[in-house]
Length: 262
DNA sequence: ATTGTGGCCTGCCCGC
DNA sequence: TGCGGGCAGGCCACAA
Image (cartoon, rainbow, N blue to C red; front, side, top):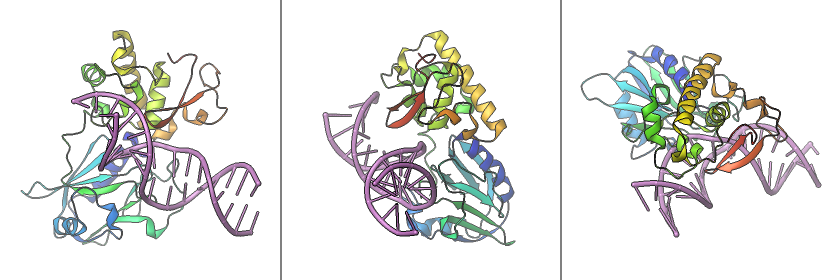
């Protein structure tokens, strides 16, 4: 599913959409517009203008519009959203999404003067578009997270460690798959109290957070983690062979090793 | 404020 | 062969 690595790939793909005059916007299902934004607002803000920059903050892709207005277009991809520019997407397959490509899944379409398009394909409508999304509510990006920022994000919290790592207001960019992968690599149980990690455990977690994101970015997606193939009934820990535990932590299905994750 | 819970979206897969 | 139920997870509203 689109977590930080996928959205980073979308950001790079979106570079091709910059500087091209926009002639039309299509949002067939108004439910795909989020927040207080309305369909007409998006068309008004985009048509006749160009995108100036593509930025990523956690799982949020922001397309800045040219000009002094400072308007921004926010794209969220949920679990099943893909970005396609001029017919080509950096991500062809998403775990838990369909491999088919139905025209009715084109939820957001931008048409450029040159005939090209930028399209968000999202079968399940879990993503959405929003004008001028609030970026202040997001925590520091997981890829640029310093050890001190990780410490602060977890400090004094009684919530489960995994829940806190996935709280986009504390750390932006981690979803369910990557959270399981990072905790598995770091040898920490997802159910640990977030604020109760020792200094050594915090250092270990930070190191594996960076290492995991580097690996998954290089391999091409959040589904390429070492733990992912074992996230199923009867799956065994790739490290020590223990049958994995499946439990719900913070409302999310979690797979972890009861032997080496403590 | 913090933490937990349930609902929403819909394609897909399993069992009957 | 068709059908129904369960599942997937990001995000949000709401409750305690």
